[in-house]
Image (cartoon, rainbow, N blue to C red; front, top):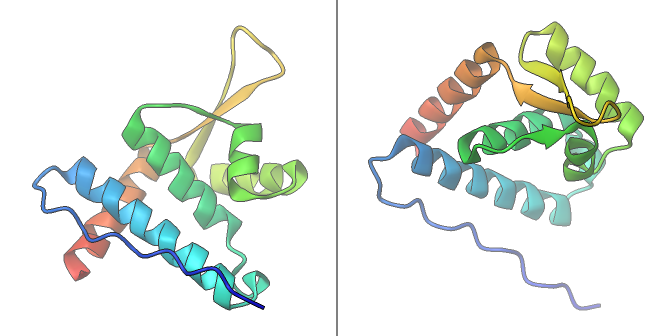
Length: 130
């Protein structure tokens, strides 16, 4: 059977803009995760909290909001698993859940200030190591 070629990780952009550098790093991490999932059993690396934190940080950098269901779809998780993981992230003060005032069925999820600080520190260290 033929296997599709693996995606290539893009080179880091030469930029002094920390947001652009972090967005580039997010893209590289996602490429690495896709490559890893194609060559190794994904269940060996099940880390939905980390995937959700990366999605939330990306949303923060882009200035958009994610819903619980959108976060669930993005992480490829059942909604019940997403809700359990969000409880864990909230218990660690990394996220906030914000009800949509125009649709009571919808809840937005955003990084808390502590979550933003933690991810910013992660990417600062990650970028310094590359």
